[in-house]
Length: 262
Image (cartoon, rainbow, N blue to C red; front, side):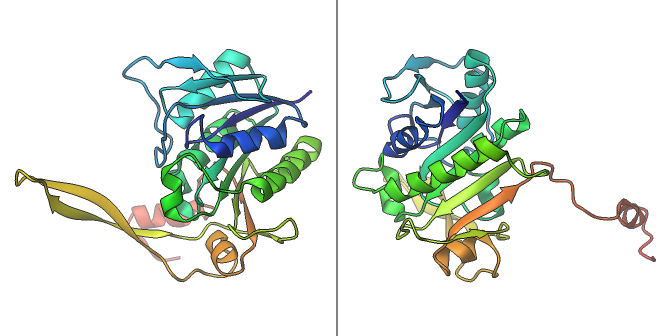
């Protein structure tokens, strides 16, 4: 049977990861390695300056499951060292959407990116929810429709693989999706948040700071954010981890040399 790695950044006790196990367990042997605690917005951070600890955790339907006191990227590296290669890697089902070029900040997407760097076809899947509900483990959230789309997409990849030039798929499911909700193949929006720093003062008079962000309200058609937020479709964005710009290298060299004439 295919070997499937499952991780996320919400933590191994999240209901999203259990919904994903249920969706994937009939497709292959599912190995779960996820952070012991919430690690959202950790990007591709890797733990290099201290040892990491691993704890066996009982997850129904999983061949084996470990909780790691590290990042989602650590989890992928640990899983490969512990269990060998995988036929598919899935990161999710995440609480809250992961959209735009800011997926490089997302622990969910970054775990899939890490797996993709090792040649493993990968899926990052996120469910749109009210941000206040992202603070827990998913209590009261219905993952059934997002799990259905995950199974469909995972089964297709296991059967036919990803198209040439595609390393992973970033999937976002609307909160009001049904099994009949259309899928849109999209590109990444340029930006989802405009971050800034808010200064506050603690009871002792010392300043402290929160990084906060204002959400972008308008999105260009064809982007993941437009498909999810405006069209209310399931957004599937093909990702290539080679971020080299597709430009004429000669034109870049002319700019670097101070010659802008063509």
